[in-house]
Image 1 (cartoon, rainbow, N blue to C red):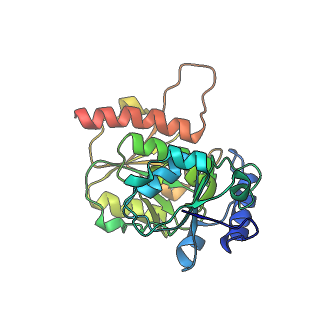
Image 2 (image 1 turned 60 degrees about the vertical axis):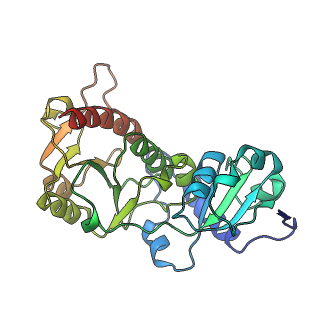
Image 3 (image 1 turned 90 degrees about the horizontal axis):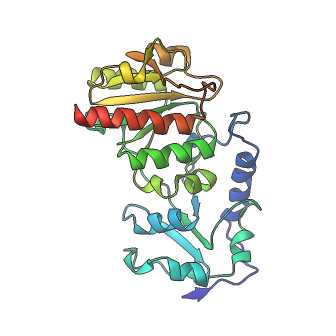
Length: 282
């Protein structure tokens, strides 16, 4: 294990701050658009920054994730089972918490662990087996929301999350931390046009259910069948018109209380609980 000199800052530190500067000014109301996911996919030298014990632990354990650098405090290293990482060429760099903090914005909770890694290769939409459940996100730009959705998707064994190339956050930083390791288990599948992707999935036998607070049917009242794709829109804007038209049914979550709207990540958890149970039992 080698120590990293305190004065040395990796070249990706500046890019990390720039990405997080967008993320810090994006709240759950989707008011500010963060860096496009397409920018990450197009830049050959782009690096994913993953921090936090759960996210780093899952990245180290994923044989498909190429980790270029691993910075960790002594305390965090004792909590991570690095022996099981399966990355024989990777040498951890033992650093102080302050050295990691200097590479990230002031509000980043890194828990003493940070990896620099290459993005995971995304599967092509046409290679997905027509089975199980997919999610499709229509211009949900807040990285906290997308990360939380990924975490829920991993818990319900979702096969993938389809996102537009534009108007989607990069798979790094806040998104990766909020996903708490789910990036290693649920692939993000970028597409150029979400409506076209839904049409293509429909042609392959996927039932397309759009979640809409004004949907005529309730989600619990819709007869579901796998394979299925659950389509969710951004808070406030909802689903765009052509995306709505590309769904087989628009359904709402029936809420008994006075508040009839939910954060999109919370709505995803409720919807997946209903959908997964019924598709699995059916």
